[in-house]
Image (cartoon, rainbow, N blue to C red; front, side, top):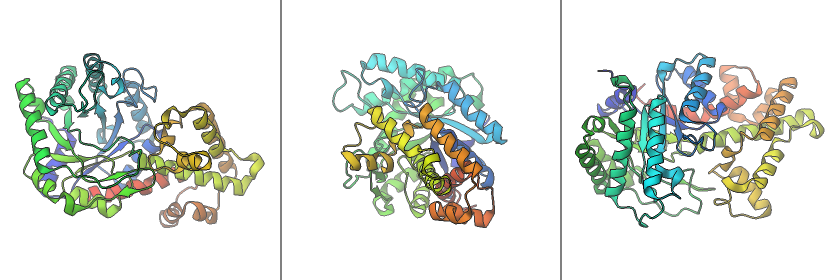
Length: 428
């Protein structure tokens, strides 16, 4: 029987190695290219890229892509870079009724079943089943049994969509006690770490319901449980991982065959990421953290551009982005509550990075293209790179490389990915 490569990696983790895997959750082409480029440079054996149910679904999601289109998009980038497709795993994150919670549960779940089936048919082989969200008519607090029953229904849809070969059968992640996707919208206080009893009860309930539904084979492919390890970020602050607070939780999962999947690990320090992996949070999710780095790099390049070509010939990328965000506030209005200059600062620099929804806009893409063209006609000297992108400057001095603007962006995103690589390959 063919063993899914993530199961093989996690088996090594269970044997005592500090081995893990980074899950990059982004649909931005530069982030995907940076992920694959970093993996090629570091000879990472396995790359995991995930799409969320809001990004990519049968209706297009906010990216406009179906699961099959997203797969073609990612594999096209990989092929263009010469990245081996046998080292690439695609996953679906928060797959469930999240995009249709305004509908009654029966209608939302019918759409969620189509969603999961389309992900599996498109070749996504790591599936997070998430039915934690309330639909129209649901009680204020959704009972754990209903969440698990809905997850089993989605699992059945996924299994029915498989082509019948062992290698194509997906692995699953269960559990719903996660931070708000994209970071908290309010100031953070203290987080409550999931209790060991709650975690074990979640596993037990899902197992019972899966077996009762005739999904025993699928249950054997459940690799992870999502819990709250005590990590989160809001607009300006990060709550760092405290191993002491999660010790009992870590000890509990060590006695099972699965690992934890940690969401919202964005902006954690390298040492905190390493501790998470050692404490059996062997799947580390990152999303806004890498698109935040993308925005940092683009803003830095615009500053370099102003130094080299002057105000009259500048791309005005930042100005274009802010104008479009003000004109189309749908992706940030619920999250950013500032006024005037404070709002502009929040829209640009919040750790939740709502800018990530706006990069595909044609006017923004045109401004970014002009920025790159300007810097290709006027290559930035090392002192300017040092001024505005010091980490990239250090990498260029150490490893060499072409200071093409796209390469500078990829290198800056790579500095974030490097911390995850170190955490997931501690025994290498």
